Amino acid sequence: MIKGYTGCGDADIEPRIAMQIVNEAAICKNRVRKSNYISHQGFELLNGLGFLATDMQVHELLDKHTLEQAQSLQQTTVAIRSNNGHYSGKTIAIDPHRIVSTSKRVMPKKKKQPTEPSRKMLQTFFALDTHTGQPIGCGIGSPGANTTKATIELLNMVKTVNQNALILADKEHFTEQLFQRIDQDTDFEFLVPAISSERTRNIERSLTYQRKWAGYSTAETIFNFVGHKEKYRLICQREGETVRDYVYKSFLTLSNKPATVLLGEKYMERWSIEDFFNFDGAMGFDRASTFNLNIRYGKMSLALLAQAATYELRKKLPHPYNRWNSTHLADAVFTKMDGDIRVKDDTIIVTCYNAPKELKLQNNYQGLPQKLTAEGINPKVPWLYNFKLDFRFK
Image 1 (cartoon, rainbow, N blue to C red):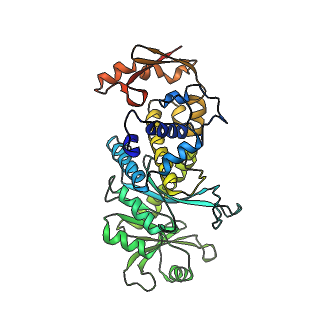
Image 2: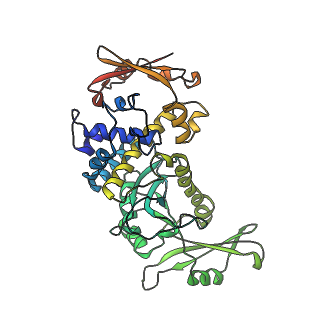
Image 3: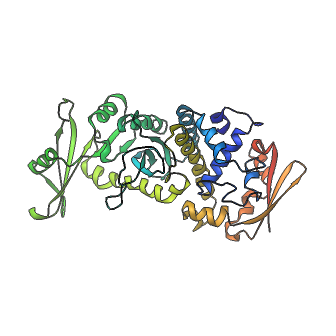
């Protein structure tokens, strides 16, 4: 996959630099360079290099590869993850995630939270399977890609998981253009909170509500955006037992599911995407030093590879290791284990010392060439010059 993204072969240096970017994401480091890392400790060898790639080398590699190439890498990742059961695909959450940026360009500042100061932000869009909590893909908002365009591109990736999924969105997706595109061009169901405008509030207070349980009632009506004739289903919920306690909230949807299912069960699943940002955000989804779209798309797409590989690793780990967030896992397992490296014949042997016994890593990694061969997988590692890789634990 990395060779496909870089357009280079096994003997080239570009895929190895990309591997370093993937491994930096796995250990939740923005950069591993000589200025802030003790070199010649094995990290560079992991990527088939005799040195640590510099910032300029990483910049030049990502800058010369296009958005289309990064999106193609994400699509390939989605197809492989889908085949490996990483998605259930019935309910998908999409979220406009703002990332604090240190870009030097002149740009408007925004608040990530109402109580925080305004800062430069990179607007990203993520799609995630709410059942497994795994990301499907991501996009970036830009002057040439507003919310509607960026969301449609993201949903084109979601189609490879499930063409009929229920899409749970955010208020920023409450736009006529987006509803029209999804309604006319896809088979998705769509559920979005309505913006609390004066028009929406007047509609909420004019409806007759049906009581569902104590303190909760719903009502429905037909809704159209101002200046447009297309009609959609508006579901309003009212919480509270007395008039002075009433709290209203409305949702626009393309789904025929009952209101109590959509609002009482399904929409709550959207918060799984916030769990993802808290759990795996440090792998490269919580920082942005530049607004160069080639670099941002490339780096985030490679970080998705690291996240997918880490997810597979967690399946082999016992409790509580399999529930640790990415930072904790990187500190405890990926970077705090002592070891040494030697070569014997055609095999690189990594000896790990004091690995936690409860991880039982030897069951999965000791005798790795034989295990891979038994599964019909070539044990030679291309970016390690076709050496085999094996592990010992002491």
